[in-house]
Length: 328
Ligand SMILES: Nc1ncnc2c1ncn2[C@@H]1O[C@H](COP(=O)(O)OP(=O)(O)OP(=O)(O)O)[C@@H](O)[C@H]1O
Ligand SMILES: C[C@@](O)(CCO)CC(=O)[O-]
Ligand SMILES: [Mg+2]
Image (tube, rainbow, N blue to C red; front, side, top):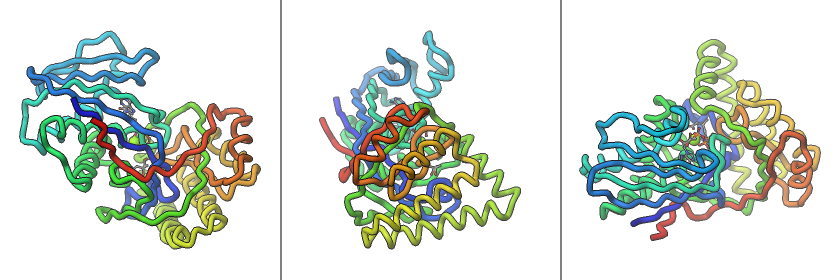
């Protein structure tokens, strides 16, 4: 049995625009997905996902050529459970040259699903790392990140950047622009997260932005302007000027909102954080619902969010210095 964990992330700047080649700066946070893998001798893949429904459920099906499993839960939950893991195991079989490798996979995660905190990337990074090690192969972090990216790219119909997966694999604050990926020095950032209890569909939201860009030149300009904010933001990050970082986060949020990926509850939480004195606040990840991230070293923003109608949970998040962790 092997066990790996990988962190979720918030975007300081640059989600969505990163899909079109602009830079982005995501930061790993100490909320983790933990994946336990045991090799099976019969070539089957059996996935137990604790967090996908109230009681969790288990699906089991045959080798890579077999059809969907026969389980008593809705098709959408099954494909939600299987999509990323199935593709991740495909990458594992490919990189280890073992077409017929089978596994028992158990997933436990602290990261809410579809809420902009990178649950898919964390699950995929931890699953690929644990399953390859289970077969006696330890991937370099770069190769792990690349395989995890291919997984997200394939599941999300070709619409994924390397940002979430690279950040989850390496930890810390990172900068991703196309296939250029690097770690950044970051000061201690006082992240506060507000979660509305909901989720957005990453694929749909990315498609929406793509269509806007095709239809309106000013939507392309908006994406390019987000890239300018990121380039300025990374310089400010080096100086550790939280006030200026917050101002740029607010600007970035406004442009994401213009691109149609915000929602009423995200706006409410963003404004509640700003009114409470946060340096800045923005949605994080694909949007449509889910989480905002604010910067505030005082307790004010967390308290204000916890009393904000529509905010289900407010919490602080520490930067995760470590990416993937090899636990067993
Ligand atoms: N605990 C889990 N167990 C099994 N699968 C999970 C788990 N967490 C996430 N996933 C997979 O990731 C999918 C959610 O990924 P999606 O990209 O839509 O959201 P996200 O990664 O949380 O947010 P974002 O990409 O905006 O940061 C789920 O539908 C599921 O397939
Ligand atoms: C919306 C997006 O930019 C971030 C999702 O966390 C999509 C991606 O980068 O793959
Ligand atoms: Mg995701």
